[in-house]
Length: 70
Image 1 (cartoon, rainbow, N blue to C red):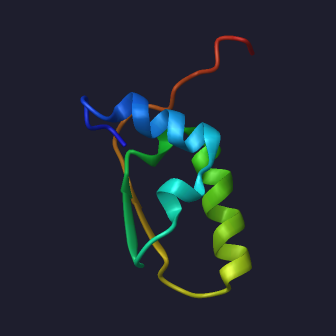
Image 2: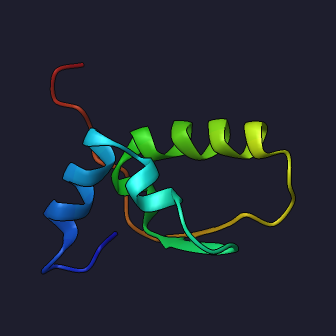
């Protein structure tokens, strides 16, 4: 998620359809997932509905973005 050349595209993809990031072979490594808080909700929903273990590996060290409208 934090590739400087693709970051904006990833954020836009998650805002349009998180499954664009979540679909594919598992386990799926998602680094810097916290850049797009909407992704966390999509991951939880997907895990709950697939009902399988070991689907996603989430890593990150970036600070979550703060919504300036709050």
